[in-house]
Length: 227
Ligand code: DC
Image (cartoon, rainbow, N blue to C red; front, side, top):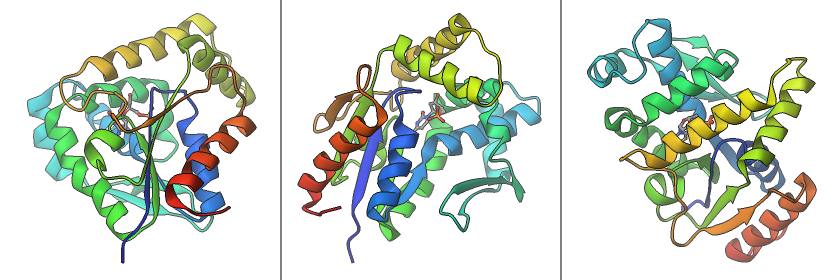
């Protein structure tokens, strides 16, 4: 039996994960957050005091790690590292940078490729990341490249942090976003870029509802399904 796959790529803070989560719920797909897998490798390196860009040390570490992705009763993806649920720890700001660093290493990308592909072989998936439409699922049924200006993304991130009661500075948030954009787009392996057959969606000036409606119409047209 063939399964549908939807790829959503784009820079950090463009709204990929909230969109993918909403769309997954709407159409009964599984949402695979691939950034969380890179974050788990970053956390493992960080905890062992290994520099996140030390390729030989990280390549040696990879086979020792037990990384698992599980879905809880409400369909939320949880990440486990050596049996421990690390879903919250991987969201720390220092781990964001570390995830971006380790994701530039070919050994890491190769190690995680099969884990991502196997999800799409056995489920209807909506997968978000940086190279889903270009490398992980080049034959995805729908490919969307979701983007927004770095200022718009920093404003949203700041709001999210404030909602969690975390005080942050706009310039610092913007700086972190631009650092990761630059690093994720300029690396040699699987850089962040839109697949040639991806539909480009810029969310700088549109809200969540409008973006969901736009993505739904793209998906329904490509998959010939209704909501
Ligand atoms: O989506 P995110 O911000 O949680 O991802 C964390 C880092 O992982 C991001 O800076 C780039 C990297 N990443 C990647 O290289 N390829 C993916 N498919 C997903 C994430």
